[in-house]
Amino acid sequence: MSTPLSTAPRPRERWLLASAVFLPFLLFFLLKVGGFMSYVKLGAAGLAALGVVATLLVKPRWGLWLVVIWVYGGFSFYVNAGGAITMLVFAGVLIDLLRGSRNRLVDVPFWLSAGTFLLICVTTMLWAKSWQFALYEIGMYLKMLLLVYLIVQLVRTPQQLRMLMYAVFAGALACVIAGVLNLVLGIQTVGENYVHTSEYMMRFVATHENPNRLAAILCSSIPLGVFAVKQSRGWVKPFVILALFIVIAALFAANSRSSVFPLGIITIAILAREVRSRRSYLLIAAVAAVALFVAPSVWYERVIGLNAAFETTTLDWSVYMRLMALHTAWSLFLHHPFTGIGIGNFIVTAGYAMPIHIVVHNSYLEILVGTGVFGLLCFLVIMVSGLRHLVAGVREQWRSAPDWMRTACFYCLLSGISVWISAGFATIFQRQLFWVPIAFGLVIGNLLQEDRARSTTPS
Image (cartoon, rainbow, N blue to C red; front, side, top):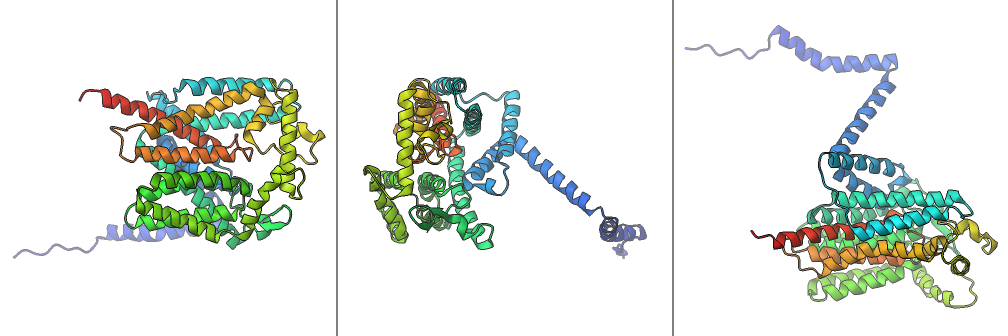
């Protein structure tokens, strides 16, 4: 009969087990008594930062999703880390290029118009009243070009395009949630959400600079949210629908009159496309009905107040100042139709006619008065270089791409139209919001070429 093997630990093993249990406590006690805990925390933070940097360098696409969510979520309100993350993503892309990855941003009209516009902007510094303002605008423009390049370089498949659309919508939703939490936790006070117009009214700003910027972001994300609803399945769909309701409610809470026009066009376009599906039609109609029902009365008053823009005088200070800015900008353009007054220089040049320093509140007129006719033409070509691919994607019969690709192109197009309409009421041409739809179009252009190449290649 065999003797059973003993499972009791040996003396050496007992000492090792005891050391594994008690040494961490002893180390913590010595560090605490010796006053070295701050160095331990600093070292742990450094290791965590190195881990994040290494991850973003190896997986730059993850960093791109983070940048998009960071921008649309307005998280620079807490930590201004968007630029650092972007540079890490750029470094990861450079590593991929050195390892043999091909350059994907090869759209000739985009590069020609973007380069010419940059040359015109630099030239306007020679006669600008403030070269510092012009240099700042040029720097912002270069940042936008970098963002477009990163998106086009990293978004290479329809699935990644869909992920980018989800990231934009997630960022918009995140800024609403963060704004509510700021108010609940006291990080922002309710007084910080008041804007003086003809009377004091509360306007939701969330984590962004002003309610009009927030409204443009939320409005551009609504088509992408509708696409997410169409793509979601099972238990996820109710949560996506709820997220869409939250974004729409926050849009009305911003009390931005400029959102009326893009929101109206988006609603009409979506209804016209989805009317063939009774369930989708009922869903969209329900969302629109609830949104109009919960809209505060002051929103309707502000919308009706837009008729002041067509009158010679008005008591609405906001409308009056914007009309003055538009008239002053047009007058300056007529005096400098070809050279412009210098990119970004309206705010310092128009002081002779404006009681306060403000921008034109129209991106296209801002560029026209700053860079002249040729500058605006180049800028419009940049927009068209992305828009033409969006339209082509909607009209294309995708053969090897997923069935939802045409739908994705349609909602990307709607998002771009929303942004570019909003740009007629705000100076946002140097913001990421304006350039992401252009990047959408350039990505779709690459996917179109690859889809056609695969369909013509014999199997």
